Image (cartoon, rainbow, N blue to C red; front, side, top):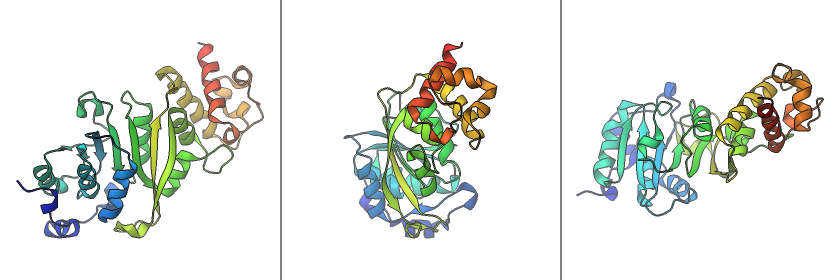
Amino acid sequence: MAGLDDLPPLRDALAAHGLAAKKSFGQHFLLDLNITRKIARLAQLPEGARVVEVGPGPGGLTRALLETGARVTAVEKDERFRPLLEQVVAASGALTLVLADALAVDEAELTGGEAGHVVSNLPYNVGTPLLIKWLTGPWTPASMTLMFQKEVARRIVAAPGDSDYGRLAVVAQATSDAEIVMDVPARAFTPPPKVDSAVVRLTPRLDRPEPKRLEALQTLTAAAFGQRRKMLRASLKGVGGDLLLEGAGLDPQARAETIDVAGFLRLADAWLARG
C-alpha cells in the first residue's frame, strides 16, 4: 500500500485538480511542509493522539499531523477537496474525512467520546466562532493549537489595559492557558492574505468555570465590552449596575478593559448569587 511519502507534492496535487483557494470560505493554504511540521510539533501531541482538524484544504497540515502518529479526523466544508483528501486517507490509514460545516458538527461524536486535541489552520471567517464553541461548549478539547490572523491571536492573549483586551481575552483566559507560540508571515500562504498570522496554543485550566458560571461570564462580558467606553456602572446597568459591582468588589467608575479575568469571574459569581 502507498504511504504518505508516495503522495504528490501539494502544489502538484492542487494543479492536477485545478484547485485554488476560495475567498468566500476564507481559505489560505499552507503548502510549506517545514511550517506545517513545526505546527504539528508545537501541538505537543502524545503518541497516537486523537486530533480534530478543521479546514484541511489540500491537506498540508494533515500530512504533518499524520507523520506524528496522530489519528486525525479532518472536517472540511469544501467538497472540492474530497479527491485530494481521500488520497491521504488511502495513504495513511489514520485519517477520517468528514465533509461538514465545523460549526455544526458534534466533536464528541467525531472523537468517540475522547477529549481529543484540535490542531488547525482555521479558515479566517470562522476562526473566532469556532474558538468560542470549543472554549464554552459541551466538548472540551485536551488542547488546541490554532492558526489565526495575528490581530485575533493578540486579542486572545491580551492583558487588561491592552488595546486588544476584550471579551475574547476574558473568555479564553478564564477557560484556558493561552500563548502565542509561532508567528507566520503572510508570504508563507498561498494565496498570501493581507495580514500576518500567528499560532496560539490553548490548554484547559484545571479551575475552568462550570457551565452556569461560564454562561454568566459570557453575558456580563458582552454587556461590559459592548459599551467599552462607558463606566461599568453604565454598561452593566441593565444587569445589576452598582449593586452587582459592589458584590464583586469592583469600582463602578472603572471601564471594562481595566478589569482582569478574576474580576470578571467575581462579577459572574455576584450575578449568580442574586439568583
